[in-house]
Length: 339
Ligand code: ADP
Ligand code: MG
Image 1: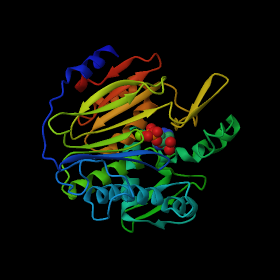
Image 2: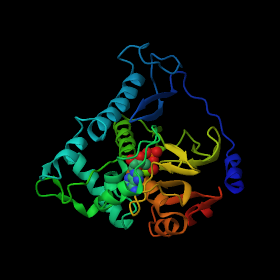
Image 3: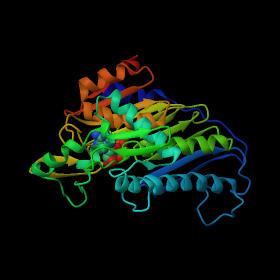
Image 4: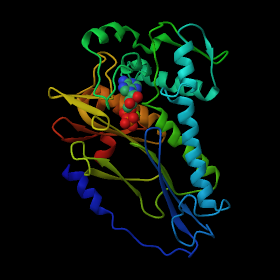
């Protein structure tokens, strides 16, 4: 870890003076079962007088507040559409109906299912949204997991080729009626991407949007890079490393976010589609690249692949870099990060 920790101190920050009305706006909120954050530079917020606005304390005409709401509403909208826990979500409807018939779905979800399928093909099935066919039997809060008999019964339903996407009429159909899908490995990255694009359209040039371990950046932090921390996988409040980034996205998948330990074995939320069991080859994977959706799905993918296969896959993708923390807590970097 030493090498990269040194990088952390290479950045001696420059201070700039800005007009009195310009400021950073920051807000955190919970959505999609995780903590989200939005931070952006506002050139002239007028009414906020240098303070970070608090929801409910500033008038509706306030631009900072309106932009925060824009981001929040977008995350809520995506959660309502894609959550497997909400009965009324479009995703739940697909899980109910697609085993029986071709279900017409929104263009937005159709496109995201297509991206998920591309990554399944690219990763030879390490990323597979049908992991949920077994995955739904885990409950990490309740320390509940399927036994080997349960897994054996539902494992054949983990197979992305059972999800048939028809682009002539935007429908989805499952060829196996035990299939369930879950977008937990890709939806947060997609939400981050959408929020950044809304902020960009509103004229914002410097912004950070994060949802759990998925972070997307617009521009830099006004003349200096953003510093995005990767959590230490075995010390809750420690940062393993801070990565300086501009105009990029970074997503971390770890075995420490949702897990329980039983008889010394760690059961956590990233499932190896080949076994139906948690993947235990590494502790943490962070992928860096331009597209938040891909970066999110790829961090889950590389986590399942493990160190050598994971590095091999990333080296084939020129637009992405990876930082892997192995089971001995050693850090490994893809070639593009080693210079
Ligand atoms: P987090 O959700 O903590 O940000 P990840 O991006 O790694 O972490 O996503 C983990 C989530 O991805 C799980 O909670 C689950 O919903 C989903 N998932 C687990 N295993 C797989 C897999 N093999 N392929 C696709 N999605 C998966
Ligand atoms: Mg992910």
